[in-house]
Length: 194
Image 1: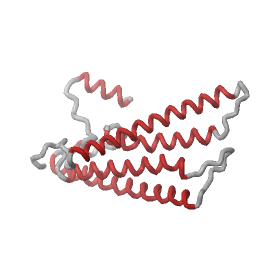
Image 2: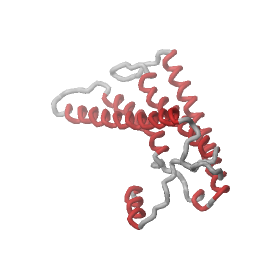
Image 3: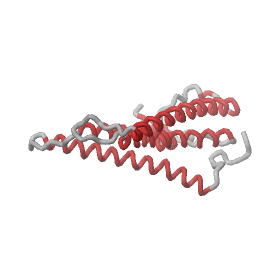
Image 4: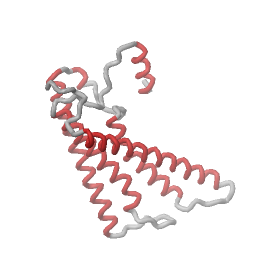
């Protein structure tokens, strides 16, 4: 391992703040889409007994669900809350562990960039051909696809960011430090649902 601070970023402070702000903003957007799902579902449920129809409510709720899921990925990844298989990696220490982390991050980066590229291409194609939804309200499909596409692009940026950080000797920022007390072990078990 290098002699640099393992949590220090290789990027200038202004770029680190921009990237961290992007991940946080993406997480907030995901939360706003969750609130939108709640409001749409509330409108659909409350509207039935009152004979009020919410046109294409199911479509809008599903688009909000996709946007919420994909926009939340980068923030979840950087917060160390994304489900990852650490059973193998946690058994190793030192340079071997760093090498395994780099392989895992490189694989994740390749997958994230691949999916982000094709999500962008699908969204661009929908915009070029002016694809419309089939629901009661015809919506240009590129609009709801922006959440899906944007979330994957931000996730790809987060993976590249983390891969570069680990390649230059840093320890993964998504890893939480080992619990020091029994209370911390219990707290983590409660948070994980174990």
